[in-house]
Length: 111
Length: 114
Image (cartoon, rainbow over all chains, first blue to last red; front, side, top):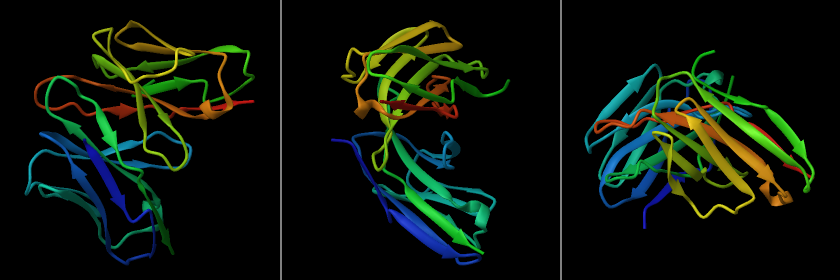
């Protein structure tokens, strides 16, 4: 069965303190692994799609990486405005484009 | 308007009411989705429409009834809901092709069932 597990559930960082969020997954035939950011009371905002092991993508202070079993979202020198819930979702190859999500990591960056 | 819009943003209804949620996408996409987001749970896919045809229904109770009149609009009709249906309902859209299928979300409707 396809599964996505995110850790930690919550993470508190000081401004400038770099860290990583983890997304472990099991799937038969990965089509894509997605990272989203969600602010309270809002819909998820698309960040990255990764398609194959070894792939990396960057956007400002965020960098996403992918292996055959997990993905990491690295946050370098975070700022308070990076505080949000980060969601990981996977999409299986085949006819369906269904996204299966983890429960997210709630990140709080303190000034 | 740009992106994916949803109305209303907040809705409070009694268990005997009938209401509808509306979603509109301005991205030229050909697939639309309804998700339910409850506290401490992953997003749950409810329905998928591709080219205005329902292609997935994840065992959702019949008190939720989707409608997709065209590729830009999606509705979720609600009737005789239960308190446990209180959640954030998210609409998303995507352009289905062979290479990529990134889903873009609306802001959601916060539903409270009394």
